[in-house]
Every structure is written in C-alpha cells, then in structure tokens.
Length: 120
Image (tube, rainbow, N blue to C red; front, top):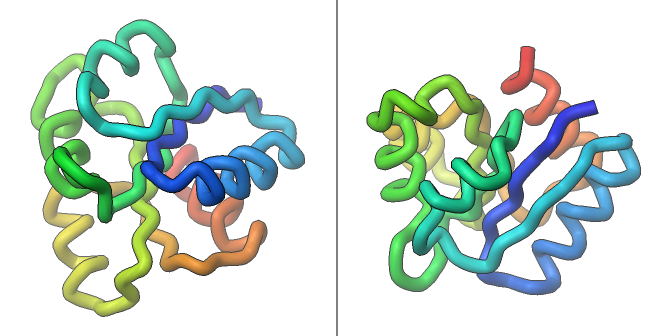
C-alpha cells in the first residue's frame, strides 16, 4: 500500500491514526510537530500526509500551505484532521491546498475513505 506520514501533537491521536492506517496495510511514519516538516518529507518521501490542524507552533493550515506552495511537495496529497467541524474550517483547508478533511473524533472508515480519495 502507501507510505503515509502522520503529524499530530497528541500522542493518543497519533497512536489511533497509526493503528487505523496500519490495519489497512499502509506504512506509517509519525511526528508530533510540524516544525521542520519539509526536511521530514524529503527524508521520508511519503505518498500522503495526514496533518492535524490545531498544534502548538506551526499549525496544520500553515504547514499545508507551505508544502503546497513548494514545488517539491505540491503533488503530495494532504488530509487535514481537525476537531473543528465548521464548514469554514473545511473551506479554509481547501484554500490551503488540502486534498481531504476529517473531523475528530472520526471512525476508521472516515479516515480511510479520506485517504483513499486523496490518493486517487
């Protein structure tokens, strides 16, 4: 399957997302911060990034925008995970270049469907 990078500041959320993705036969690499994300993406070469929105320091919207405006990374799909379920947040994520969006708490099927759509 695909190599997926997960970035979330919550250890519990990282573990949950990893378990969902690994159960679907994806290879997973995880990080707890978006700081230095570009170097991590260069090193790991993920097929897709699952990115938490609300994180200390550089948030997911900023990281998504930075990746999508960099020619080296703009082809890598990004699925945003957020606890904010408002339409404006989904719209703002799309404006930053996100390819998908899931609202926490989510079920395995929700995440896997967003990943599948973003990879297709």
